[in-house]
Length: 170
Image (cartoon, rainbow, N blue to C red; front, top):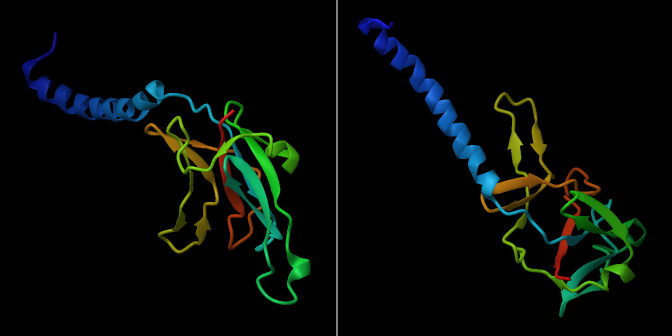
C-alpha cells in the first residue's frame, strides 16, 4: 500500500513519462492513417553543372529541348541528362530511354493528384562551425508525412542536378 507522502513523488515521475508518450503518439499517429502515395514520376539527372538539353512537359507528353552552352568554348563540357522513372511502391528509380518516357501521360504540377510533392533537404551549418552540409536529399512530402526517396542523381558541390519532369497519370 502506498503512503500519502509518496503520492507527489509518483505524480512527479509519471508526468515526464506521460509527456513522452503523448509526444510519441502525436508524431507517429498521423503516419498510421496517412494514405500511401500511388503516382510514380519521371525525373532527369546529369553530372555536370550544365546540361546539353532539358526536358519539360507539353500537353501531357515529355519534350526534349536543346540547351545552348552557357558561354562560348563550353560546348564539350555539357553533360547529357538521363531520364528515370521513380517507382513509388518500391522506392526505387529505374533509368529509361526518352522513347519509353514519351509513352506516358504526364502532369507537371508541383503536387501529385494524391496530394504529395517533391521537396529537398535543407542547407545547414554545424553550430560549432565544423562544416556546412548541403542536403541534396529528395523527399516525398504530403498528408503530414515525409518519406526519403532513393533518387539516382549525380550531385556536385554547387548543384542538385535533379529535375522533376512530371507525375505519371496512366
